[in-house]
Length: 88
Ligand code: SF4
Image (cartoon, rainbow, N blue to C red; front, side, top):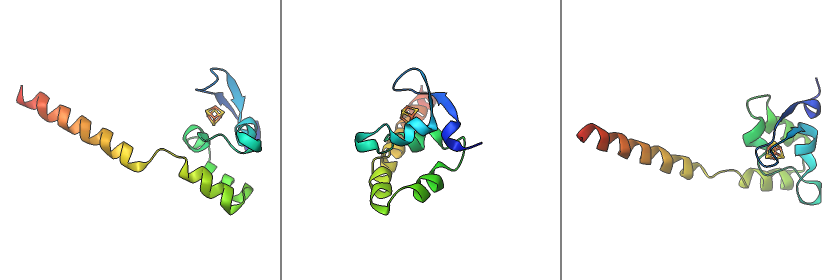
């Protein structure tokens, strides 16, 4: 099946959308900034977008992803909470 026809529930709209919609729903028909987060479990969305987009647009899209240090901060907060729980 063409990836454009795949469907999922959109966390922003609260309704079902196709991947084809996600590819063009941003400003000036660019992909939604959450396209990697929403589709990585379904197929290789990074490779697909790299094939479809100009290097500049792909780089801008990649830069809009959640920064890895935010994830690291969350992991550290969980670790600290677990350490506090072990002391109680
Ligand atoms: S990529 Fe954007 S438009 Fe598509 S499902 Fe995710 S949040 Fe919704």
